[in-house]
Amino acid sequence: MNESNAQESTIFQTNKWYEQQREAMVLDQIEQPTDGRTAITNKKVLAAMREVPRHWFIPKEYAHATYHDGPLPIGHGQTISQPYIVAIMTELLHPQLTHTVLEVGTGSGYQAAVLSQLVQQVYTIEIVQPLGEEATQTLSEHGYDNVEVRVGDGYRGWPEQSPFDGIIVTAAPDHIPQPLIDQLRTGGRMVIPVGPSGGIQELLVLTKQKDGSICETEMMAVRFVPLTREKD
Image (cartoon, rainbow, N blue to C red):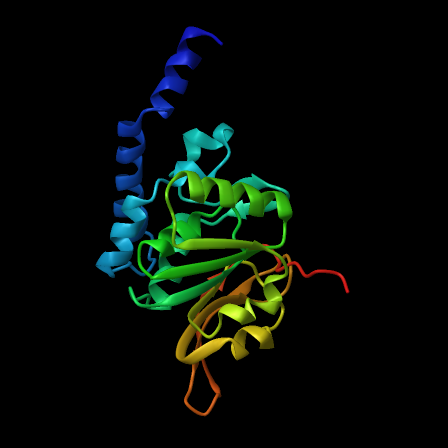
């Protein structure tokens, strides 16, 4: 490694540099975006985005791009979502400190870490075993004690921990999974991208009514990796 590369690597590894980059990310991409996006206004969500170090949840080779405005690869054909998407999905969930939340699609654990700042308990499911194991280790090492990770098929949810006050799905099925609807508490909200694999999907907010019916609101066009199922 030459001197300039060594210096660059050192800069990327300083907490102060990361803090500055994270503050710029929240301010420019989320709180006061200038590209026509809807600004995130929930102060607790903004605080969580400022609090959780995104660089803990990505491969080291992408350290220089940690707080850039876009998704990043995390291995096994999966990605960590764009920071703005994490923020808006979190805001749309309407998280409360008394809530128990299910996340489908743990990935690297970043979304779960953000949610952990805002709710009482997070249950999160990842179908890719190495990712689930890595996320478990990362979350444990950094003290996210109110997050529990399971390796398994997120389409089926986590019935023994239901009902959930909120469900957030970070991969796109081509339809809304009925098990997740069944596990949503009356009055609860689900934030989920739905649409074709490899195409544009619609980010939906679902609210469960007293009679068990679902009120569905379309929010915005998004692009997620497909929700992977276990083979029967």
